[in-house]
Amino acid sequence: MGIIPETVKRLVAKKFAVIVEKGAGSQAGASDEDYVQAGATIGDAWSADAVVKVAVPTTAEIGKLREGAALVSLLYPLVNGPLVKALAARKVIAMATDAIPRTTLAQMMDVLSSQATVAGYRAVILAAAALPRMAPMLMTAAGTLAPARFLILGAGVAGLQAIATARRLGAVVEAFDVRKVVKEQVESLGAKFIEVPSTEDAQTASGYAKELSDEYKQKQAVLIADALRRCDACVTTALIPGRRAPILVTADQAKSMRPGSVLVDLAAEQGGNCELTKPGENVVLNGVTFVGELNLPSQLAVHASQMYSRNMEKLLLHITKDAEWKLDLADEITRGLVITRDGEVIHEAAKKALEAAA
Image (cartoon, rainbow, N blue to C red; front, side):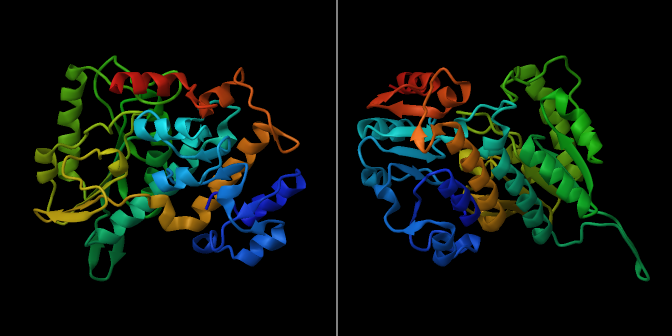
């Protein structure tokens, strides 16, 4: 759910008129009555001046938007060219919540980070549930049970949350990331950082990861292969904005995992970090379970909605004044957010992606 009742109440106090679709908050534990009491009207949300949603809109949903209306949603504009063109043709002010820059000022609006927190936690729970063993070390009358070994690939927001969750379960955790700056964060959570001996670093100015040399990738492959052979569960979380998710686990490496082990691929929606991942499916090959479930935050809808809604509240208050638009493209956050306006694609990166695909 894009907006929860608590947020509606605060937006109404700021002069916003809020329309909520019937039953929209049911999965997040919010009833229509909760929204009415918060000051919202239950009705056709697509008739509003601005529509706030979570998932990427379908073609049918874009057709419901009024010409000139605004859409605030996940859009992934660098890899969704047809969607961007459709939004421009509809003359919609399209704002991609996934394009919010990672700056100090924008932290409270950072949808990707808030949802990655939920996904990282959920991934470890799924892995633990699929394992045919318990996670913590236990000393029992029947003997000592060794702890499970977890391998986390990628130490961004999702990866760090996965590390923390696996540690809380009592597992021994190793983690890998191409960005050297995260080593201290990984170790502060009680995990061992697997490091490629190299001077290369994939940290970009915006805090995301970038591609590295073939030589680095070869060394990386050897380290990951060794770690996979000794782990019970692996969670992969590596993403590159606007690109297919990088392959971190080849088919051969995955086949070398021990029978009974599990791999949860958080990058499944962008192709997957493992060659054997089937997006949207859970499969067992050679005794290893590969979890390719999509949209993990939706499985924890209460907290995922709560965090997304707070992100939206901060964002809406940043780009409006007295409930009227204040879209200043000189502002870094607004410039990074707005993809289409007045029938044109105005986001430079999205425009370049369209030109490259033409």
